Image 1 (cartoon, rainbow, N blue to C red):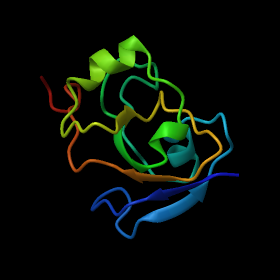
Image 2: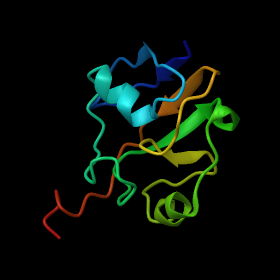
Image 3: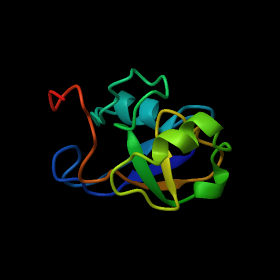
Length: 112
């Protein structure tokens, strides 16, 4: 079973973490199942960017990005070449290293 190493995040995972995730599971599902409360305002329906992560290692082992995800990622805070929406990034057979960005854009939470 692949291991996802989560780099330290001041609010969600201050010490960082290593979790196991079954291949075929989204990164978002794996984080939530392991009590790492990543935002997912659209309930993982690929309609926002609140679950944005940066895949520091293992990016190529994930499923290919669909056009909807690519379009949404353009709006994500701190976008990098190895960014993904964790609700759409499906774990393959390789271990991953994931960084949760410091900020997220959540219009509902921000009262916009």
